[in-house]
View (cartoon, one colour):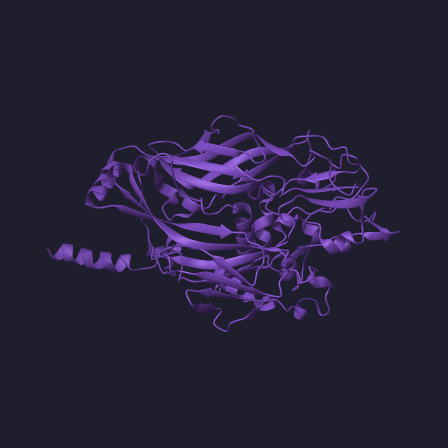
Length: 498
């Protein structure tokens, strides 16, 4: 008896020591992981403005965080333009809406019909160059018109993998779909409990496309695109015995299971002095808006002269307008052309959420608004990086030749990395993304799964965005992040609490 007490005393001391003092290992027997391949329903080819539907494995423990799509991007038709280059868009910008459904009932994604633009905005707020550069195969970098030369095909040079044609396809990968995939239970989503899991991707039109040629505009049909050989992959987890099933059965008998995840609600109105926005949620975690050009919903064409850029091209930008988040002056001018550049910004904003003004100081100058975005996604983390002050420029990598700008002989064909440059004014001209936090942390990202955001349920709830001195021809993409909860009961009974 004394021996057992001594053993327990020593064992408790041992277990309180740091892990480096441990000489034991744990073993979980009978568990395996394997990757499954899936193809979309109907066809493995999808064209612009169409949809992709795929069913995930039934009666399986699915790791939703491992889910990704692979496809070959190409243009449908040949172009009759001269010195034409057509670039590969970022994969997420090809998606307008991304919806998860359980047993044919949509549970996430339906409220966000601007998936690609919202994703790109969040990507720029939460990742730096290392993230994009390490994933070049996924085309996370914003396309930049930067291949200079006189070849008619332009499928050449160190940046050739960034362009495609009707005969040359490029492999793309889409790894993040939001919604249910953001749940803290996403690594072990049991379809035998939650029901059949389906993913639906509604595709964009030509808006994300970037093209350059000597003509003033693209020829008919040159911007139509398609995805071929579409495949999905996901990992499933299996147990060799019935232990897991018995545990889950007992848990469901004792009560329902709660699965929180992040949900996005978005809208894209024209600029106005007072914009009303509806985001009904039990826990509204963050509220933000993105400035957009009036031409963001059309493809971007950059005109060249004999395959070279004119000096004026660099003033209007060489990236797709669809993801150029620009806060223009009331006259529609770029900020980098103004006196004192960004310091001369006269545009202000404030939120009115159920009678509360945000920020508390009232009217906030857009030039200073990036600090709220950084606070939302980085907090006090000094190591957190973002791309809010990034732009792409070729001006320092080309030389003047008469009235045109051409590539110096000493410079290899230019790629996106060589064209990056950082300035404060870039926030207004390229990355005007303003986000305010409303919660301690989203429930899906909280260790305690706590709903700590603002409750905006009820017909009396009102959210207003007030803008001053903005260009009224432009648009704003307003989005709200909230915490939704799935309640799972016996017999695949699923209830969505928003």
